[in-house]
Structures are given as structure tokens and as C-alpha cells.
Length: 481
Ligand code: GLN
Image 1: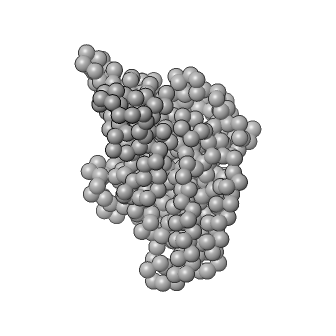
Image 2: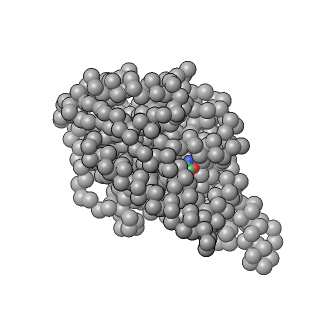
Image 3: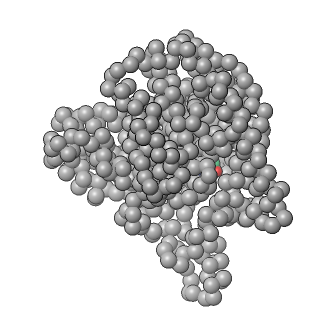
């Protein structure tokens, strides 16, 4: 499959026809058994591709950084005129009247929206099995999950059903599926990318981020996503941030990428490796030895509060979700069933029918954690633990440039294997959720294969130092095979 960078160059030079590329992609999607997409945008996309082919030599088009690149968008991100469901029955038929800021930024740079990708309902899950539209399958083994919740986006990139994809990550939803599908996925620093138009699950934790088959494409997409926006007051307005400068001096061919990591220090928190499957552990140590050969050094560290990360994350995420999801009542848009009765009956019927089991479980648990009498015992305590975890990350990142660990403790599991036991699914998130609690940036890059199933290495950096993550990942990508 071609990379985004090759597509842009190919279209600009006339060696690639945008329309042909797009039709190939749709043909693949239509033949696919993976169920990566909920809604396709074929008619508009093909029309736009023809326009790109016709006008590619015009100055205005030549300046576009993603000219003609097919991008799949997770169904939690609003797209004007294209159904956006968050993989939930309650939003079926909802067509947003506006674009999320990231989608507007993609369009401005000439990207073409392929369609909306499948996901866990309201981003709640790690396997894409809670989708109202049925699960997505892992392209490396159709009997296994692609990870989640951005499973459709990851599987689509891995199977060549798109070139780039957007995901959203509240507790691992970009990195987990990137790891299980063998692609690159980056969760930016909290506050790096505008979330205007992202349907909220847990606001204090989530970010939209890029998913791609190479580190360079990830960087290319990240730059576009970081477009400044007044619509999200939590976005930090850093002008010319380091990440984008670095990516682009690097994309233009300057800088010696091997030398760039000489002297880089990597901390390896042992708690993140304990409990991993042996093949995952082996691949991560191999990657670290590889880094050593390339001029970096690593040291083992301990992060004692990691054991509280899952409890703290799930209490905070569910509490925020219970409040965020209160807005879905089916009265103005989305699902409307039965005849209207009094408000309580109608509201309760629509929500009972419209939300899936996992979403209801979380609304109930979150409401409980926030209720009078339990607020201090659960929610407030979880916030305090969150501060301890954040401090621990900051402390570790004072000593080391980066931290490294497995993204997931094991390779992709079988469809149906964990879905009946929510706790065993939650436990799979142990390495990813702590990063969202701390708000630091992190990416997953393929670092090995076990019985045909990909393994991901998670790199974690300092706030707003996405450039260091990309540099380290790029060097690894170029030197491992
Ligand atoms: N698996 C985690 C959860 O279910 C993370 C999901 C996410 O990042 N959206 O909450």
C-alpha cells in the first residue's frame, strides 16, 4: 500500500490518479469481511477525487498538504452531512450540521473523507465488540478482535481500506487497536488537538489523534490535526510548536535521524512489564536492545502507583460519561421509539432501548460514584490518585527523555473471549489508561509479531514533546525489520 506522503507526491506530479486510488479503496472495502466502516462517503469522495485530478496543477491545490489522501474518520467525530452514530443505536440517523475542527482542517488540506469507522459504542471498550453495528475483525486473523475502541480505523489502515485514519483515545483507544493491528497510533498531549465536534465520553482524558502505517504519515497527519481552534478552550495555543517544526524539517530531509537519538535516555517502568505475556515481554526487550545499539540508553525504574491506575481511570471515566451521556434523550435527534407519553416514561424508554449494555453499565456506575454519600469515597479519591500518578510520570520524565513499555499486555484476543466478562476487558487497559490520567503524549509502534499477530511498543513522552516520540519511533522503524 502507498503511504500518504507518496499519494500527495504522486498526485501532484500526475503519477497517481486520485479517482483510481479511491475506487480501488472502495472496491477493497466492498469486498471486505472486516466491517471497518459504519457509513461510507463514496459519492462525495469520488466527486472530490475527480476535482483533485482536474485541478492538481493549480497553485491553490499544490499547496495542500494532504492533497487527495483518503482519510477514514472514527464515528465519534462529527462530519457535516455524514451520519455520525458513535456506533450507538441512540444516534442512528443523526447527521451533524457541522464539521469537527479536525475534519474541517483535513478538508482544507485536500484530504478526502472515505467514511466513518466502526468503534465500541461511545468509545467504551477495547475490542470494538460493543458496537451496535457488529464487531470489526482483525485483518491479521478474522477470528480475533482488532482492539478498540478505534478498531475500525486501525483495521482499515492495516487492510488498505484507507491510507490514514482518525481515532480518539480516552484510555488507550488509539494505541490499543494500533498495537493489535500492527500500525502506528499516537495519542497527543492533553490539549494539543482541538476536540470541538468530538462526541464526549470523558473530557478530562480524551484526545483525537492520528493512525497510519508509518511514523512519517503519523507526523504528517498530526500536524494537520493540531490546527488552532477557539472552539475548544482546553486546547493550548502554542504557536509553531516543536512537534510540527521537527516533523517538517525532518520530512524535508534535513537532520541525521540516526544521530538524532544518540544519548537519548529511556526509562522502563518494571510494573508495566510485569504480567505481560512472554512473547510481548521478549519483543519489548528486543526493541530496547535495538535502541541501545542505535545510541540510546535505558534504565529500569519503578512506578508504584500504577496499580491504582485502572481503578482511578474507570471511576473518573464512568463518572464523566454518566454526565456527558445525559444529553442523549432522542427528543431532538437520534432514536425515537413508541408513542410519546409523559416525559419520564418517554425519556426512560428511549434510553433503555437506545443504549447498549456496556454503556448502561457505565452510566449507572458513574452516577453511583458521583452520588451524595459516595462522591468522596470514589470520585474524589480517584482524582487524588490521579494526581499521584501524574506526579509519578512527571518525576520519571525528569530523569528520562522517554518511557517505554508494551502497549498491550498480550496480542489480539479472540472475538467473544472477554466481552462477557467486563473486568477482564478493563484489565487489558492497564498500560494505556495511566498515560491519559497523566495527560502526557504517547504512541504505539509495531515491535514484533507472535504467531502472525502484531505486538506494539508504547513510547511515552513529556507534555507537548510529540517531536521526541516521533523521532524515537522513526529511528526504530527505520532500523528494525
Ligand atoms: N478501554 C477503555 C475504556 O473502555 C478506553 C477506551 C477509550 O480510550 N475510549 O474506557
